[in-house]
Each structure stands twice: as C-alpha cells, then as structure tokens.
Image 1 (spheres, helix red, strand yellow):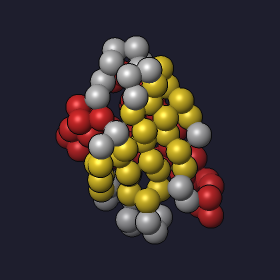
Image 2 (spheres, helix red, strand yellow):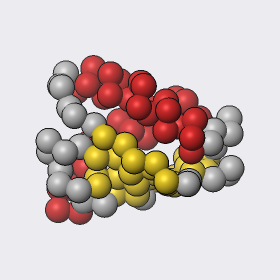
Image 3 (cartoon, rainbow, N blue to C red):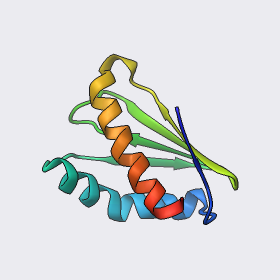
Amino acid sequence: MTSIKNIHPISAVVLFDLLKREFPDYINTKLDAMLNIDFVHVYNEINVLFPDIIAGTALTISVSDQEITITENAPDNDFKTALLEEHLTSFIRMKAG
C-alpha cells in the first residue's frame, strides 16, 4: 500500500478523469508498451485494471481530502503489479502531490 499526500486537493472524480485521459499514454511511454488499461470509479474508489497482463482489479485507489492511497489487489503478480504501481504512484504524485 502506498499513500500520497493530497497537497493540491484532487477529488476522485477529477483523478478518474485524469487517469482516463492521460495515464495510458504516460505509462505506455514509460514502458514502451501498448497496455490496455481500464478504470472503474465508484464514490471515492478507483479500480485500475490491466486486463492483458493481470486478471481482475490490479490496483485500487482510495481518495480523501488528506491523502490518496494505492492498494495492490493482485499479490500473485508481485513484479508486474509493483512496476505498474510505481508508475501509477509517480503519475499521481505529479498531478496531486
């Protein structure tokens, strides 16, 4: 689990929109890849799915006024998930931290 201070308060709705519009290009550029990425937003939670490489929800982002928490949901894929979480954390820090 990774926590990021929500210094420039960003809501789950705004973060969801940023993720949908900008994160796929960001991570695909960093990894020189063509990953398929899906996002599901319910209230203050955003699920991030990488259906081509991890079955089910890979990461869950919880958003509050104070912090953004990223939780790994795919412990069987430690290396893949850790790398994806690292890039997701960098992206969110850039946008909200």
